[in-house]
Image (tube, rainbow, N blue to C red):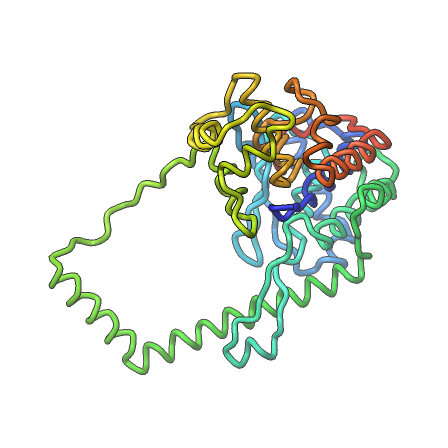
Length: 343
């Protein structure tokens, strides 16, 4: 497939939504009381003695089609959860608490001490996030069987480490981030003391003076057209898939010309014409676009348009096989509630 298909977030959300949504909160004060209780328990204090202090606010984020809750990491001692009014339940709240607990980084501490940048960051919904959420679900009341979240993760083919592995990963992350910060502080101090910083700043000032330039003006970030994903998908292939070749690949199921591909790539918004939607869904299949993102981000899925999954099998059997597998997982553990957006 052309794109790297990362279905981790889809699997995590699907697993969580196959459970009851747990205790519902009638107000942000009620949710705050619940969070205070969690952070005041002996298990929390002994298991995560270095956990950040977590503040809670009503807010989240919204756009015309979705809404989201999120956790913000400020520093090692402080985090904030912003809970959307339409996501006021214990599952979402503890999901965000798990983000606050999950380790952020891993790397080679010895190499970092020697000045090498050997640091990586964990997937935001990766194994240790899941370990944190599973540990919270097993310990605190969310209105479901304490071990059911781990079973749901397992059903959706997600590995979930045990609590001890999480504790060790958290300790490693703290050491990596501290060592990395010390390495950069040392590097900047040496750069300052060697005079290279002043030399560079003087050179930059002379260059600006010679060119008669003012400080860089604020830059406007342009909006990407909706159809840019088609262009990116074509270029992700090696060798590159030309507009003509893409049109040829989808033509067995929907009439398409290179001119159609070029027009759709330039579209600012999702098309409304049924034939154009068929073309775009066929592009998704032959380019191997992540089917979960295609549905939630592009709002393209088999069945919404006149094209069928059976028809797409003729041009993209691997993609169709993946979609059928994911649908099978959902049928075995269907969602009991809808998150409506990121969390």
